[in-house]
Amino acid sequence: MTAFKILNDLEPFGLRVLVRVDLNLPMENGQVSDRTRIEAARPTVRELVSKGAKVILLAHFGRPKGQVKTEFSLSQVIETVAEALGHPVRFASDCIGTNVEQTVADLQPGDILLLENVRFHPGEESNDPAFVEALARLGDAYVNDAFSCAHRAHASSAGLAGSLPAYAGRALERELTALAAALTTPERPVAAVVGGAKVSSKLALLGSLVERVDHLIIGGGMANTFLFADGLQVGKSLCERDLADTARAIVTKATAAGCKLLLPRDVVVAEKFKAGATCMTVAVDQVPDNAMILDVGPDTVTVIEHCFAECRTVVWNGPLGAFET
Image (tube, rainbow, N blue to C red; front, side, top):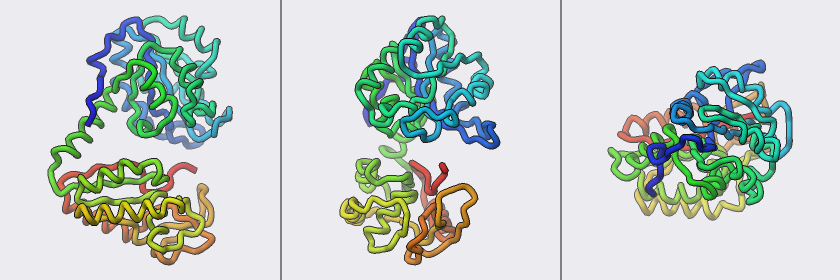
């Protein structure tokens, strides 16, 4: 694995440090229901504060699709963030522009500023160079402490990492160190679980894993593409049908490498992807035309449990079921 710089390599006093954190916090009745993600970033943020950095937090919340939508504003989590960090946090009503630049210029060593949802700008998810440049003007250094977002080629992750001196935060450092150990000198047998929506976003990962692990468990939306490639009908499910040949090539590569590939045997389906939808469990060859696959079924869970029982190392990337409505 490529070497990466960590906080030990950064002298942050007086520097404007852009810190990518995961604040996509679950909400219930307008309140944050789980603070785990922000608490994961607390060691990094507090260390930077103690060393006199001017900390500028970057994050997304939900899927506003490049538009300003008040229901996705990070202003609603500012109090929770301040409580979790144990430190006052200021808020900027945008993440780029002259007003934000002035707010950043007014920061003192040890201050924390949370910028508004980066996904309010279409340039975030398209990794637009102009948007990256606008973000980069706010900082002298960049720290990524959002492992859950690090795989995305977005402006606030990949873009900034290529535009400013970049470092891994403590949470990301821990994850990368564990991942390196799991993939280079693992205790065998090794199982890898790969979920998430799209095969296209994890082609390189899948191709690498089949040569390194003993069992590869594929779930999430990407499993639908593999099921379709195997001749099964997936109804209205998320599916990259144009990548069926690619999926079949990965299966062939896994077989040649002696990697056992595990796909869903049964799935949870519903006619709509929304909270409270009526769901049922069916075998993978019984998915109705008007339904979409939302999760793996209990038989598949049992098979995964048996696989884990045989393994000494498990590497997990991405969810096996739909989780954001």
